[in-house]
Length: 264
Image (cartoon, rainbow, N blue to C red; front, side, top):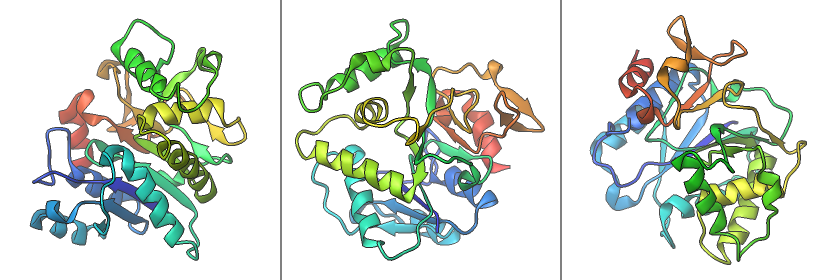
């Protein structure tokens, strides 16, 4: 089976200013009706509209947990715990995904790769100094400087990798989450900073697949001008003519168009 993990916690509606689980679920189930979807939500934050939508789109709400530190970071430890409980299940691919600002234009598990992790690259370089996004990502990376070693030269000419959509094999995701948990148990650090350290410093090209955002099948919209996107027959395509299967950060680039794309 294929599994999507995400968090939808602290909301009071299935639609939000960024998008919402409504658009995530509706667009996903147009293209994949069978994959398992598990979202984390604290018991006190479950509301009727969320339960109804999850029932409609066959999404499982997991609430049997206690938050040990910020859920934005702790979520990955919970994903790992759930995966290890499914040890006897035949898991194929896993997608760790944000929920609030993600939509689909195709089946995410139809993305073909032979490596263990399929990364979602952003358009900005880690070592660029001309935009706030690169500056913030370097700050996140530097949070780990006294916790885990890394070679800054390995970030040269490398795109920021987004931790909001991580696709991989069961093996790849499990190995990454083991790495993540081990570091967080020493010191709580930013998830995206740690993800970039891991991919660029602790893996190789056999483990990870990194394509520029214009060639990837995951579109991360941070600082992307809508007018530069390729739109064909009502769908956004990359420079290879492939449909972006996953679109992330829909609130950052013509959000009305993105919501209509999911709702059509």
